[in-house]
Image 1 (cartoon, rainbow, N blue to C red):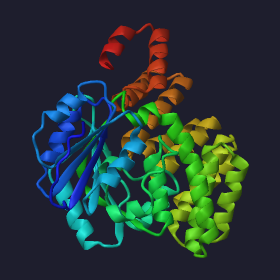
Image 2: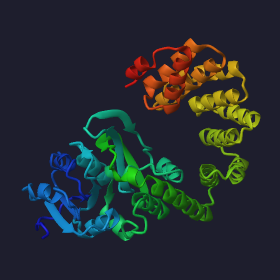
Image 3: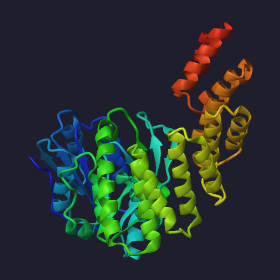
Length: 420
């Protein structure tokens, strides 16, 4: 039996669908019920749960909560039912395993009330683990509508559990596309920008995004990747057919080249990137990105000299510095030019940015490999160890270190204890 109430028209509908979410449900609900903004309804679709979900939902006695029980139909259909039932001017998405911080609703409502041109508004998020502990990873997404629109042609750069959107706009667009159960949010964002609406993002952390082995994004990862490529191709094609703006066309051709690169369709990727360059982009950042990706394609094909020329040219624009130096180091390593490779990887270690740990770990690994090839075991050992400090799950570093220690007769058991 549905548990629902009749109430005044709320400003916000917080929409949650839950399926067998007993483990994290209470924390998710408390995060919403403890919001500083109070004028909301909490609409929860219990999508056929067979665990203690219904018991937990019914344990709350809060007039803002509206619960609807149904047989299991999947997230997309559950969300569409929630949209139809919603009363709020705005809808805030909430997943049953994430946590909204107290100021989230207040800040998003304040922004949307002022910025009438924004249809969908996300936020930054901090990543937590199964126990609710901060992992150190953050989701700092694009903020400005133009940047978000461009990035969406490269992938999903809007965090679904953080968004608040205008109810009227999403209903006008027909809600979520039920043909895409694994990528329903990405389809919606592409439709939003395709119809000329803007998406924004608050540059502050209002959500704790939980990573765990049973979360939907992990279970459907391969399907999401497959759907994402199809959706991007369709969206880019539609936009290219409409746009006459030179800058926008350049970006779309670049995005298409990146897509073909991801599909390992190297010839077609080069063709699209060359088309983008032929439009003589004035944006140095975009020009640098095009040259960089073209260089990476040649690197993948082991055409190192061509790759080096393009990567060096991309550096002249002053963008992608850490990535370009890392790729150059890999090119010189592929050519067995050890001193140049070492120089580039050491340059990588001198850079500081939000992704430095990823590049630093890779640079230490490659330095370890170079030193190992040069017969410098102590330095190789140090390189692999530094890599594992930054990324303890780096399988190649662990394997190479264990092999090195075994060859030298050093204590591998002690090393394993250091890395666990």
